[in-house]
Image (cartoon, rainbow, N blue to C red; front, side, top):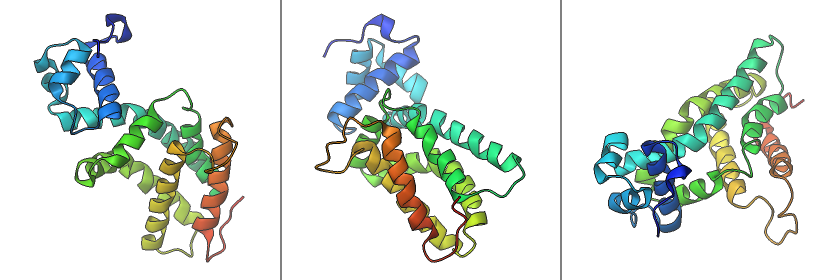
Length: 210
């Protein structure tokens, strides 16, 4: 594998991230060494430790650069809804959660990165996923609780856990197995996901689904 061209990154840190992402996705976390990353990025090995501290820190940074912009937009849209001062619907809350993801695709490596994350040991990836999603899940669960008063906090937590699992599955498989819809826009897939999630979240009590 040849080193990345110099013009492909604007900084040493970016070059390391690009190289690490390529190798992690292709070969997996365990099979990728910091030395191989440094060689592909055409940087000194010490630079990887300087910028990221460890290989685990590098993996966390890769996930962060894809997830953080999506989560920032999610929180921005949720805040705008909450600041409106009116009673929200479940549909509005879910739109704010899911559509920032749809807006980043298909021009994104996020599906490939998340696919790799799911194949790595939980002991490695759970802390990374918790760091990236804890605030967003807490905020959206709190918003959903206002329109799902019949659910206990524990039940709502489980349903959001399964919601996120469905979302990640859709990143990897955006259309049903055997379907001819592979070329459909990802927003079309998100619409189906929202319909599914609304039914799951509101099951057993009267939600305002909008």
